[in-house]
Image (tube, rainbow, N blue to C red; front, side, top):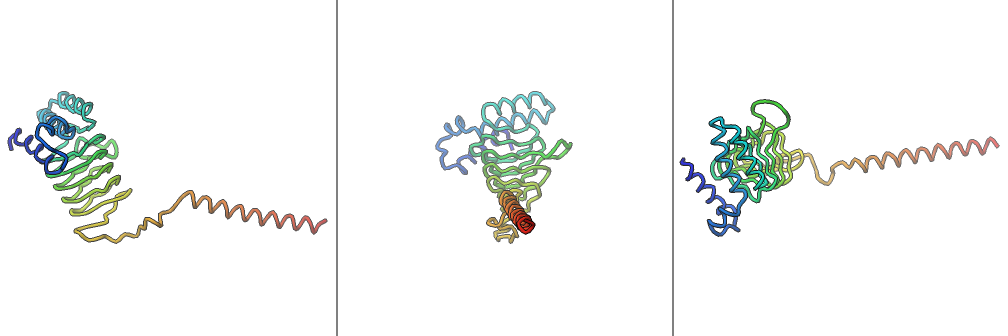
Length: 219
């Protein structure tokens, strides 16, 4: 596909995904997510030709103006949409398929200083909601959804919905996945500490009463 046709697709997906988009003029001038994607397309072209300094310079200038950091080495497919976008971080070895949507505050990052593939692979038609963190060399299967604020550290099969910290699958292929974790039964560390303290205080009171009783009888 030609470069300019790819840029045209980037505009069209904004109209498909954002009901607030009105005109091409408005979208081209005011959508920071679109600006970040376009800058990345250029930076990635330099990166592939091993002009690493120019690639990083473009990406950092884009980061300054858009608040979105995309490493020039990341591979991004067609019709990628970043909604709002502030705080989005996409790592060097990320691979993102077609028709992927991510929201503000999303991190597609690594988990350490390891070499090689260390960032996620996001398959086609995936949605990653606000503030979600997808970390490490894992794969998010096609047509999956990552819930807002989730932290995903393991592979996710296709057609799944993931929520929570750490992320767990709650829906797969349209059916709810049974889980042993009940939200209303989550452990409360402070409550457990208070219970232990109360128990110890009660035990101390009993021992004190026993000592008082022994002293009384001695007199």
